[in-house]
Length: 453
Image (tube, rainbow, N blue to C red; front, top):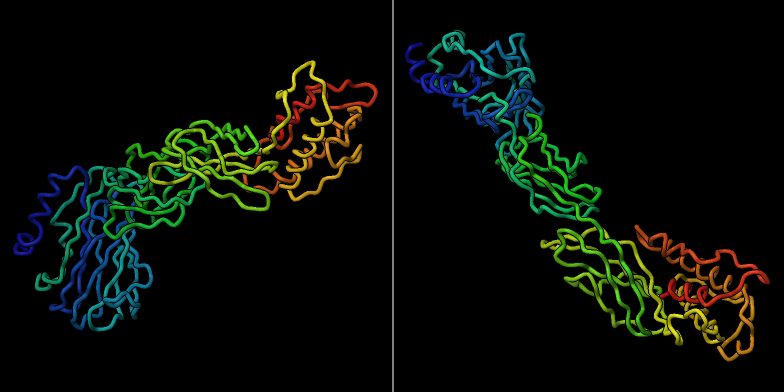
């Protein structure tokens, strides 16, 4: 026993004196074969209370049929288990063998074939275990098998401390879309499976731990915009807080697309924190959204349009890594050049041309929505056909109704988040126009101009 103590225990005694918390020994013992070489590796030699240590033991090419995992520190509350498949060959293919937990919290494994096999074990530490642990080395080794088997003993040492929890140092990238599904990598230490990751208390998906326990990868969840804490949970519990944060980029707000001529649309929006550029998209009638520009500023003048056509615009923020936010709400612009004066001001006489142009603009919106347009009151194929026709409340009501139907259908056909309420459901002065009672004003016409362009 003295030879055994000097050979194996002296380094352990030093560790017990200098470690800030207790040490736990597990003996891997071949109970039958003296010449069987046993090596054991731990995925994590530092474990927090409530945590788990995974062990893979490779048994050499002897004729061993029994292996014991011995817990000789009864002051700990631990459970040693062997998750199936207990045994694999060196290529990780399952082979025969089984393990049994004894009343003394040892695990006895038997029935594996001769030759080199791997045995997988797990040690689960009770959540209440921790702090200073007084260890008596002689009592630990008092149950040691015959010293002649000493060559087959491997002692695994685990530091048991709250300081052994996994540490997350940073996450890359640190920005991403609020739509989620951005590939992330967390750098740190002490990671081992099964692990979970939350971003602002919302779980990530496809989480995987590297073999060396230094990185975790996964896909971000869909989340509200803003900056949130990133927390890793392993079998040891929550990761040590390192103020790791992730910013879900907000979609741009305040998008305003406005036709400034029959061949140009001006688009502006509000800046987004963390964005290095923006992805501007346009949808033409009958088509899908297509990226047209990647401006670094919050405005763009689009020259790629044709007259009397309705276009839909949306914009996304893009970070320095090329990751885009969710898109903004969409805005609609119709490339109509209205007859002066523009805007119509108080005192301006509303003419047939003004009414005809608004009908053209409303028809363009309805065409973009896949709708046809008919005018029940004073239909006309040209402005000249309306000359001499007095402007009535029914003309304005019909313009509003046809435009509302077109905007509702167009915005309803768009991908989320669609259009804002101010676009899809505009408000007007004198919402109800009564023939013979409501005076038709230039303001009624100007408001429809502003909605369509």
